[in-house]
Image (tube, rainbow, N blue to C red; front, side, top):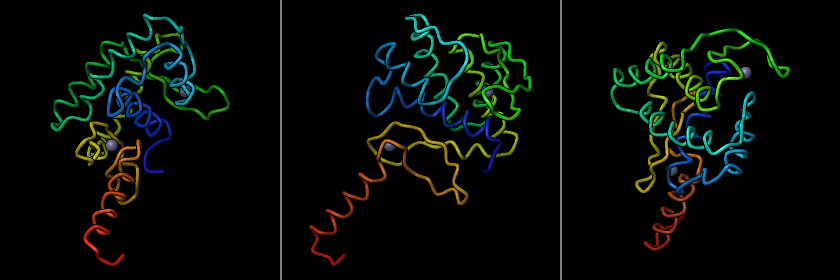
Amino acid sequence: MLFAHDTECGLTAAAALVNTDGRDGEGLPDIAALDRFVAANRWTGRHERTEVELRAVRALRPRLRQLWGEDPDTVVGVVNDLLRESRALPQLIRHDDEPYHVHAAPRDAPLATRMAVEAAMAVADLVRGDELGRLRHCAHPDCTNVLVDLSKNRSRRFCEAGCGNRVAVNAYRARKAAGRPE
Ligand SMILES: [Zn+2]
Ligand SMILES: [Zn+2]
């Protein structure tokens, strides 16, 4: 593990949320889709299943996308804004058989607020470790998805939506068409 468990989870969940508004169109079209997203990313705590909550989560996405920006000072500004607006207050807590970890928003805070705070706290960790380079954009030319490179050798280039495979298949076809041996 490169970073603390909650940092890695926070980064992965933030990328997943940003990518619901990425390559494959609207990934959170309704409350049922948000339910599935919450379950898949193991969000616990308050979850209202309302249109208001869904709209707040969707509205958070473009702001979280800014965390993947080029300029570190701008990223830091977004992190600080998110923490300040959410009145983040870091506390060590234990729940659901997990060891102690940091929550900076109470479990009964709105889902979008907790998503914002968790993403901001995780990116704050990257900034402190001079590891912002772990936040990348998918290398596929047609893809707008983001990714978090948690590999030891910093080798990840493609998002989790299968872009790596698409590139490999295209390269294979190109080699074949050129009549070159495998
Ligand atoms: Zn927790
Ligand atoms: Zn991609």
